Length: 462
Image (cartoon, rainbow, N blue to C red; front, side):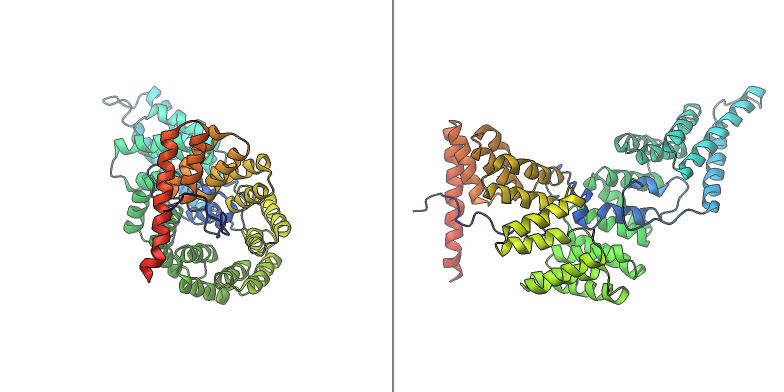
């Protein structure tokens, strides 16, 4: 008879990919790429998006320019600025011609056209100069004169996206598509807006169509990034590989490609990307960090430790190095050293989900649940489907005699991983403390069934 009880090995050392987003779950909106732990995901996305060229897409609007990072987007030339202004003015004049059908060129109409042209020119110039509030004001004035202009709707949406008002930008792109449903530029812009708003599922079909119609380095790379954010690492590898062959020396793409191979557990792919990085820049932080990961996978902790230290020497703020060192220390039972590494990571990257989770775990083990909870909540805020963080948060709530507050994170942990027997057991305990005997019995029964299945697996193998 199997008696449902918690496993003895409550905590197994969390791997670096423990922050899976469970992007295949309905309506999950993972946000962990906003953390620097994901190899400067947003900076890399901005770096590539800023190279896209179209008069109605100012690519820097795709991701906020205020995001710090090592990768600097190229400056636009004066020719591009003039091209944007001239084309927008031309399109604006054509649109304005429809304002008063049947009328001849009266003085009022000529004045309105000049005013309209000035609004378009002001808005275009403001976009180029990064004055997004001024651009928004000018394009709103122009839109009031020509409400059915797809071009003005796009430019207004760009000015809003640059201000972080993604939902408003999306609404404008939707409005433009109702006027011109098949417009490829608006569809591409909408895909970028969805990406910025972390709506990766909504972005994917638009970005895939973009990459298929125009398989450039930027379109392939952006689609790969979107799939990466959805945990679809194998699919992302296809796009990222194509992008990397179009620009073999692009280190940011190789960085993400190596991470995709690593999360897909394709370690030969990791090695291949490492060799490509070494050929470009053998002393780079990326190369040392990736070699450290390869050593860590092979249980060569001392070699991994040396490579992570070399990565820090090359770039003291390289994301993920301190958390990687902390995980090695934690596995070796060096709790104080591990805590120091995780705190150093958080001092630079406060949203890092791995370091937040591990700090919560260390403090829970020290029987300081009240101090652990904020760290666990921070990890969950970045990745709402972080199974281990949800479970430990439930544990901390029970330690504080808060069974009502423990139920939700424990239930979400079982949803993230239905085979997590221990989470079912602890959830049953929380229900029992609340007097919900039927629910408690159900969870204990699930736990028994899962443990019976797990105990039977070795016998089956024999």
